[in-house]
Structure formats: C-alpha cells, structure tokens
Figure 1 (tube, rainbow, N blue to C red):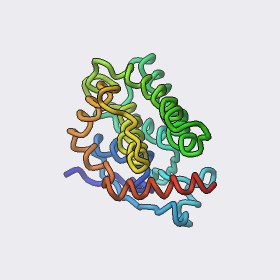
Figure 2: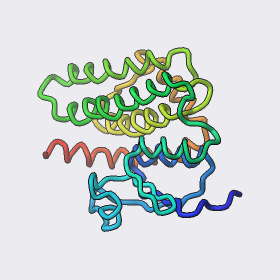
Figure 3: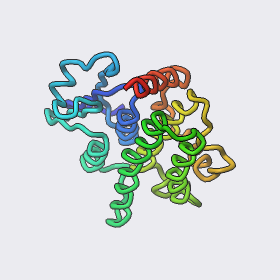
Figure 4: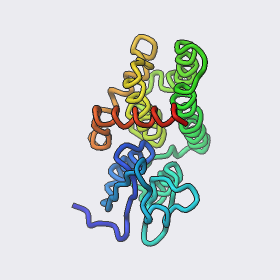
Length: 225
C-alpha cells in the first residue's frame, strides 16, 4: 500500500456530488487521504467556515497546507499534482470541451433539473421535458463512446456521474419521476452501467435509500424557500 501523502485531507459530505467526484479522483490516482464528513444541511462546522469562508461549501481539499475549494478546480489540481491515470484530456480542444460540458452540468442541469423543476409553475410534464432537453445534449455527447473521455473514466465522467445518476436521479426518484428512461436515453443508460462496473466509482455511490431521503429534504427546503 502506498504511504499516505503528507497533509492530504478532504472535507466533504457523503451526499454531495461535488465531494464524491473528488473522492473518485483521489481513489483513481491512488492517493491516500484523511476524510472529514460535514453534515452541512444541519450546521456548517467552524472548520469548514475557516477553510472556505467565501462559499462556505464542501468540498475543500487541503494538501501540504494549501487550501483549495470548488470541486472542478480540485479535480484539475489533483490531475496536475499526481500525473498517473490522467483525468483531463491531453488535447487542448478536448480539455476545453470537457470543462465546457462540466460547467453545463453543474450550472444548467443542476439548476433546471432540481431547483427550477421543484419550483416550476408550469405543468409537471412540461417542466420534465425542459430537463430532458438538456440531458439529451449529454446523450448525444456519449453516443458510441464507452466513457465521455474515451476508453477510460475521466474528468467529465466524474462530474456527470456524480451529479446526474448518483444524485439528481435520486431526487427525481423520490419525486416519482423517471427522468432518464432507457428508451429515451439508451446511450446515457449504457454509460451509467459502465460507470457502475468501476470499483472506485462503486465506492463513491451513496446508499440509495438514505440518499433519496436526503434529496427529499432538499426538495422540501426548495419548496419552502
């Protein structure tokens, strides 16, 4: 077993897709780390507020005294610090497009797929179709590929995987919505099956029932806001 890298700590949450994707990257790179779990829906700890006073959110990576927030930035830092098993594409254009689609998922799909869906004043079937239009763009990106990055799991797989099948889909299930049925999204569902076969991914998928309960608490908060 590799010796523990000096000062590698991750402050995260078991239910956070942003935290889980960072764990996937660390595991893929074989970097041992200390993990501190935050129950951020209840209270934000003094440590979290100290380490991330700007956004006050998980995850936060601490490496040899250096503090880094924001999951996508952390993924890039991990990839450049530990160069084995590359996460980001080597080609400049492919790297830029991976960042583009990751931003699309974290900003557009997350907003429309949960907050806007829950708060929508439209008919639910209309709101669902708006979410599916966004997801179809990802369906087109994964067509005829094993993973978004090619033959091995990479940056975009970690972002999309942690957010859609292993987070938002739990909320949709709790709401009684089959958002990504196989007949509409055959390529995305094939990709999800591929993801679930990877050990480091399986280790980072939250317990389904517990996660659905968690996501419904978030849905309740959105409705009440």
